[in-house]
Each structure stands twice: as C-alpha cells, then as structure tokens.
Length: 233
Length: 233
DNA sequence: GAGTGGTCTAGACCACGAC
DNA sequence: TCGTGGTCTAGACCACTCG
Image (cartoon, rainbow over the protein chains, first blue to last red):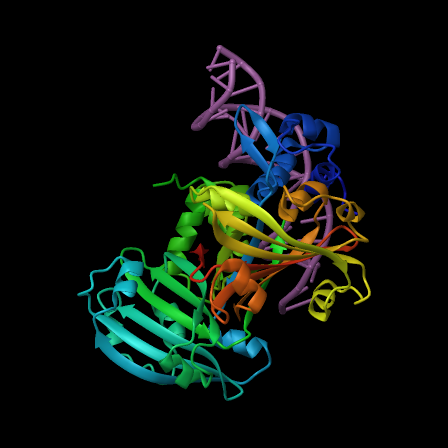
C-alpha cells in the first residue's frame, strides 16, 4: 500500500476509481485543486499523478474544460530496440557476426522512398549475418546514405557491425520502425539456411540525423521468432 | 527555440550536449543542483527534464553516485493498440464485423500455457472476422476464461466484437503482446481469402484482470500488413 | 557519514480555450 | 472573461548507496 499523499498513491486511487466505474468513461473528474484538497496533498502532487495517466492514455486533459476518463483506453506496447549483439548476449548465447557483401550502388526504389532520397543517391549497401552460438540469428540488409555519413565509405565493416558503428558515430535525431511478415527470398534462404518462402518476421528501420537521412535497414529474423512485450494500460 | 529555463529547454540542452559528445557515453554529468545553477533555473525543473530522459533510457541515474550518459542508448518504439473498429475507421474505410464460430471447449496447450491456466479450464472460443469496406481486414481467434468472465457464456457476440465487449466489461490489469510471422493455415486461408501458407503477421495478446487471466487472442493480419511506429531515442 | 537523486509543499504566474 | 491545467520557484525532508 502506497501512502495516499504521494503521487503514486494519488495515481493508484485514481486508477482504482476508474476501474471500479466510480468515474465512468467520458465522465469529467474533479479538478486538480479539488482532488488535492480531498486527498490531502498539494496540487503539484496531483498534477504529477494525472500527467502520467494522461500520457498513458487513461485520461484526457484540456485546459478550462477539465479532465475526463478516456472513452477508448488504448493499450500501448513498448518495444525495446537494443544492439543486436546485446540482444543475443541477453539470451546467454555467444554472439557472432560476419559481413556477407559490400557495394556502393544507387538504392532501389523502396529504400529511396523510405528515406526520401533520390534514386540517384550514392549509398553503401551492406549485408551481414548475426549469429547466436554459431547458428544464424538475424540477417541484416543495410543501406547507408554516404552524403550523410561519408566516413562509412572507407570504414571496414568486417569486424564490427554497421549497427554498432553507426550508433557510436552518428547522432540520431529520429527514426521509424515497420514490422511485417515476408516470405523468405532466395538470398535470405541461403544466408539463414531456411527454405525459400518460409514466413519470416522482418523489422525495417529508417533513421534520420539532425539534417539528412542516415540509414535504412531490414532485419530478417529466423522462423518462429517472436517479439514479446508487456502492454501498459 | 525553447526558453532555457523551462524543463523542455533544459532537456533540449542536455540532449544537445549528449549528441555533440560534450558529455560522452558512460560519463558522469553535473548534479541537478549544479545544472540548475548553470542554466539559471530551479532544481525541480532540472529534475523533471532529467527524469524523462532517464525513463527514455538516454541517461542512467543513481542516488549518491550521480547521473551518467547511457552507454548503449536503446531506442524504443511505442505501438498503440486501439480498438480494431477504430483502427479500420482511422483509415477512412467502413468497418464490418462477423462472428464465424463459437464454442465452449477446453483450451489447446498453447493457450493454456500463455495464460497459465490448466488445460481443463472452461473457455469460450470465438473466431470472428473484421472487415474494411467489405473486404477481409483481420481474423480474430479468441479464447475467454469463463471463470473470470462468466457473463461471456450467455452474451451474444454476433453484433459486437468480443474486443469491444471485453474492454467495456472487464477491468484490465496487465497484458502481454507477442508479434510473429506465421504461415496461413487452412482455416485462415478460407476466412481471409488468401492462399494457404502465405506469410501473415500475427499479434497475440494475453490479458489478465486484477486476479485471474481473462483472455487470449491471436489476430491474423492480411498479407503485406505493416505495423509502423516512430522510434523515440 | 555524506552526497546524490526523489519527492512534497505552498505559492505564483501563465496559456489555452470554452463561454 | 475567467476557470482549468501547465509550469516555475525556493525550500525542505527523505531514501538510497557509495566510500
């Protein structure tokens, strides 16, 4: 039990009232000042508690009109995106990495489109495989915008994955993640040692620096791979 | 440009110093008091700014030892889980729904395991299809724990999806999401009108109430479906 | 033991937005 | 206009944890 005059306590109490339908969906709840008075704490404390509930989507707040219980509480799942090496090591397995191919070529349309670059852009194309205890774990298909990361052209990616090098080298401003199921192609089948056409979970990440697009990567997971995460509600 | 003595301003400045390597990964940064003094604001303001950066994983804080720049900044993608009806309507399409099957049977091992229930538990098994502009959008394969939601046994799910009914009826305490790529089975192929074996993106949600497991659902998306989300870093 | 972050308070002013 | 949430301040005490 948390003390009721702490922000956690206030939050707990508000959650309870929402769960128990004491405050119904769409309904207005008391103002911060009133709640503070009722629960015997400062308004600041109530504000902190409610602010977090609002960012979690459980309530909706607007100046002047007040705070309402959300009508359609939308759950949220947070997916962590760690270094691949750490992801492998976290399972207790030994991590391995090998560069499969390297070329400086213009990007295919889908990559140019995802990053908002012209198809004539100079890009470095790398494919690499990540291993767990010597077995294929993940296939990485990466495109790096040489205009944004000129150092990549001369860097040696045989020892360290582009994943790690970029993270250390380039300041990242924003990114986008796309998750999809795709049939394994011929090249992926060979690299991962699975049958062509097998359904594979793919993650695509587009990354932008402060000014220019930096990199686009498609990760092919092994068959059966699952992304698991708790849902905050 | 945000005023430097607001919490957003402080956060911006700290982010800048980390991006510019002025404060390097693993390095200790000044104490809240020092920063407040330097930036000309109250310690409370600095605290708020740093608290959010810590929960975003950009810095690591410990009492007494201080605040460090995280060594391995792990990106995070937040996936929203709305009502399926709202998800469809958000695309501008007309939403449709049809119940395909209904039975009260013991769960298969994978469902029992996911919820931590015995395989002898009484469960309601529903399959339903969600439509966008009359075309298949999503196949729902749901198991409901009748011990936790007795009302489900007599409820009519032909008009309203279990998705919506449960959300309105049962208080949810926590949940888990698993994303995977699976080959389309015979039943799914018929319901979604796609070829058997086609790679489909599946979402599995397990949901618990305050005391007991409530429901397990597997959602089969149409071929090519992507989950897209910004990455916070 | 002492330094650091974590939190609460009481008061104040501001910004948005419904009326 | 004016009520509501959003934020800043200065000060205080506490809790954790390192040396």
